[in-house]
Amino acid sequence: MYVNWRKTLTEYLHSLYFNGRAYYILNVLREDIDNPDQRISQDVERFCRQLSTMASKLLITPFTLCYYTYQCFSSTGWLGPVCIFGYFVVGTLVNRILMGPIISTLVQQERLEGDFRFKHMQIRVNAESVAFYRAGAVEHTRTNRRLHSLLQTQKQLMTKELWLYIGINTFDYLGSILSYIVIAIPIFSGVFDSLTPAELSALVSKNAFVSIYLIGCFSQLIDLSSTLSDVAGYTHRIGEILEILSELVLKQANADDTWDCDSDSVPEVSHPDTAFIMNQVSFSAPASDEVLVKDLDLKVSQGHNLLIVGNTGTGKTSLLRILNRLWDTAAGTARMLTCFGPHGILFLPQKPYFTDGTLREQVIYPLKEIYPHSGSPDDKRILRFLELAGLGSLLRRTGGLDEKVDWNWYDVLSPGEMQRLSFVRLFYLQPQFAVLDEATSALSEDVEGELYQVCRQLGMTLVSVGHRSSLEKFHDFILKLCGGGNWELSNVKQK
Image: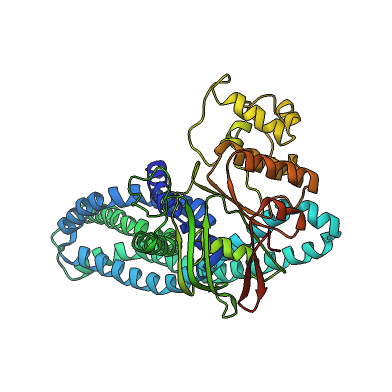
């Protein structure tokens, strides 16, 4: 049950999380949901495990309750079952009151657990940068600060759970006394005066066993209070992310007008050779009122290569986010008129991304289909593009295109090699339009020129963000973002 529940719930959350831009919005744009990765991977696991431990008792207890209620009724009449059931109701109400503060504290603890784990992941990913700064002592202090916040919350949780445990154990101990009180009342009221001492003793023993067992069944349910409080806390966290994801998926289904090349619902477009059209577009960063670009009119068509320049903070990368519909415009309309993907539009982000997998899987990313065996028709293309990007030695380091590697690509490749491999991916997918966000910042001008020349030879129309003047010769137009919402569009030849 645990395995099946976890599989079903996690896969359902994954289907919402990776639908459209939901994962991006949760991790970058939304601040009301902390640690979505922890909620999906860790909270779901704990929720299913705790719920499965409760399942056996919840399934079996109703049958044992019915049987021993009848047996108790046979010995004491209505008095026994009524007293025991009333005792159970009182115990449930008391535990319900004691559980209330625990749930909110548990939710807080899980949030701090995620923050503490994220801090260690941050150190792991940026270990070299931290080492260059000689910032070990600073990160030590900051990491311990998160640890202390977590431990303080755990102490508060333990204090609140203490009272719940006291209530549970008190209920268990008083239950054994109640079984004798239940049989004592009819005995002292004279109901069993006709019985001999031996028969009375047997009756007391039988009733004590039945009553204690019946109370024991209720005690098992009461004992689940601590587990139930954990389940309630995890339910709250999973429910939050489930509601937000469902809302995002519904909103995207109603509003998103972008599509992939393999979509069955690609509409008819009037400009098949046009990538983007922006009419009077104004935008600012999320949660900011400062306008980055105001009333921008822009059209990117095939053969018209565009270079976007400007000082830091003027909105160059933000403009690409608007084009890719990662951000919404504050005013105006931005439309993507060519399908996204291979032979359509492809974005090369400023920070290269590499998934887990073989060298071939890095090259063909984000395509799902791969050739399982070497010697496939794609091999010659991939090898040629690796050589064009100056990464012929990478094939020898990995042992082949389909050899499994046991390393993290970010640890093995230098920043320049990562950008070169990103261009190999670009050459392989060969889009009609390539949007490059400072994709050669870690490379020399000579290498940059060679890579851009290959892009032009492969027939790509380029939209580039960059600072180097050496990029101008590969573009036809320059869009300069001047800050304060101002912009200038000029022809490279006129310049």
